[in-house]
Structures are given as C-alpha cells and as structure tokens.
Image (cartoon, rainbow, N blue to C red; front, side, top):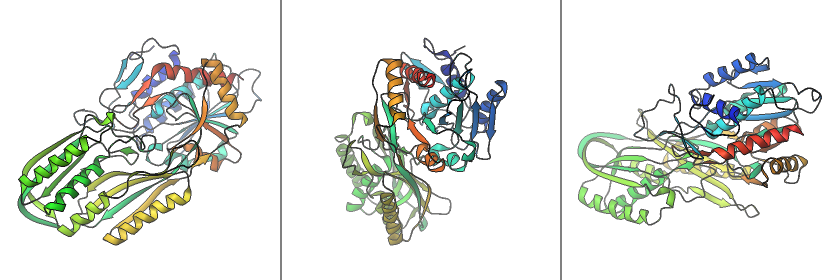
Length: 477
C-alpha cells in the first residue's frame, strides 16, 4: 500500500499522507484536493457538503450502538505553504511533493513537506474511511486557504455544524494540547517611488542561506529576517556613502520569515561600499543562531540603467528599519511572545511602486490595532498607503476543562506519556470557528513538525503514529 514511507505502525493515515502529497495544494489551489476528498466521501457512502470557498464538510454516522452520542468535529486545512530552495526545480501548481524518509524523519526534496496541515487531513481521511474503528458521529471539516489568512474558514456556513467539541489538527508539538492562540492581521504598504533612467555604477547584493521559519511559532527563536538584514546593511552603507536603490526583492509569504533578499543600488565608490558591506557581514555572522549557519552574502560590481531617487530610497530604508519580530512578551505564564510583527516581503512593482508586506500577531486585539496604527503613521510620514486585511481573532479556552482532561487521559492511555495544555503564538482556525459556532469548545493537537513554512520542514514519523493512536483512543470513549 505504501510507496515512500516504510515501517510504520498505522498504514492508513500514512497512505493518505502519501496520496495527498501527490496533489498540488498550495494556498488558492485546493480544487484538486477538494475533489479527491469528495470522491472519497462518495466511494464510502458519506454525506458531504462543498461550498464556493473550496471548503468541504464530510459527515460519518456513529458506529453501531453509538449513533446517538454527541457529535465530534475534526478540522484541518487542505492548503500548504509553497516554499522551495532556489536550486530546486518544482512547480507547486502541477508537481507532486517528493517524499524522502530518513529513519524516523520525513521530509521533501527541496520544498516544504506539507505536513502543515497534511498530517491532519490524512488522519481525518483515515477516520472517515476505516471500517474497524469505533467512533461517535463525526463532522470532518476541511478548510481552504488557511495559510493566507484563514480565508476558507471565514467563508464557511457554520449552520451545517452540530458538534459542540472540535479537535483542530494543526499544531506542531505532540506533547502539548493547545488551548489558545493569538489573532493576526496582514498589512500591505505601498510606497510611491520616483525612478530615473540613467546608466551608473552600482552594486548587486544578495543575502541567502538563512533558515526562515513560521512567522508565529519561530518568531522568538532569534532567526534573522533577510529583509531586515538587507535594510540594515544598506543603511550602513548609506550612512557613509549616499546610495540610490535600483531594485529590491525579498521574502515570499506573509506567514514565513524571509530567507533571501536581493538588492541593486547605485553608488559612486563601489570599493568603499564593498568594504562597508563586508564589515557589516562579519558583524552579522557573530550574531547568528545555529539554524542560520548557512547564511551567505554575495557582492558584485555592476552597471545599472536606472535607479530610484534619493528621497524614495530613504523612504524604503526607513520602512526596512521598523521594529520587527517580538515586540512584547506575555507577563504571565506561559511566557510567550505577546505581540510580534514579521516584515514578510518587499517587491518592486511594474508601476514603480515598492510594496512591503507585514504580518502582525497578538493575543490582544488592542495590540493588533496598535501595530496597524504604527504602520499607518509611518506610511503617512512618507506618503505611502496601507491596506490591512485578512484579520482573524485569537482564542483561549480553559486548561482544566473536561474536554482538555479527556484528551490528556486519552493521550496517556495511547502512548504512556503526558501532555500539558498551553498557548501558541500563531494563528489557528479555532478562534474564528468558535466565534461562529455558539457553545463550541476547541483544542488543537498535532504531531512533531519542525521548520514549518521552509524547505527544511520535517515530521517525526513515530509522533504522527502516536497522535493518530490518541485520536482513535479519544473517539473510543
């Protein structure tokens, strides 16, 4: 049955993980995976409901003698973050993910693995199709485009849901049960820039080799942001020799810490500029965490055919120097980031504008308002505009609720281990869904998945097994 994954305890969920890895499912491209789930529902005689947002709800009746028990809802998102290494030839629109097993570790060849949230989708499909498991009535909700702002979950018709307990399968740490997450908002800042066509000497500067990571879960790990690093180096050069940017591009996804950035800029004294850059690079290298050990910086002299004005360059550098990463920590346990901001991407548009994307997160709505207001203030000062979008609410349950206790007991029975309730500095669909379904309790659980939203993403195979066993055990009772 299995092709890429060998020597696993539970064949069925790993089978589905292999199958969905063959289906392109980057955010906004979920029609193929939704069609696959629909066909599984039809083949197994299950009731299903699809909407225009590429969400699909599949219902399964309770096992014999359990038909009238309370319904349990399982929920996961079908999309994945599409990130790849520069030297990897891969189209996320058409190509399957190539799975590689290295002992207990599962990864992909040069791309994101898609365990976020493929492991959740696979477990739910196994629950729906297994003929041997004893379960209460199930409502399995597969949502679309979670990674770009919980888009699918925001469009779903929750009158279709009857469950009062929901297990979200979208966390990435096995020995915790998540009972709360932060809210978030995305911001696009557009800076009008004046461009001059003229031939001058310049520098091409490339930054790469950084680890990147999830802009929520990894934001406090000290990993460098390529856009921020580029801004700092360019500002150092600009202090001593005036520069004029010609082009800049870095980052790709709002919810990923940027790993690469490339900039071209005009400068009269190329040799002096290179000396300043090399000095700055040495300083950066002394402050790298282990995950960023692959950091490199390349400098080339070049001739440029145009550049932004000095005034426009100063505006861009000002935005690239804004406070980034963790802005404030929680004052009560668990001590986690309270509020953070990720300067996620910077692009030169064909209209001559510079577009810079941010992702802000916080457990407190007023802090999200504050981050938006600060970006609005900076934009006003430099004559730019901001667009805030894809805002979603945070969520927090009770650590001593019966639901949490039931999960902890099931985990201990299934694995012989203990799990503790905690919060997460990332967005989950739990907040949005519980705000739409009155009286719905939620927890979020998951297998050990590392380096999410990067091509280094891996999943521990035995952890996937244990989480599956725990879901089975939980649904028995």
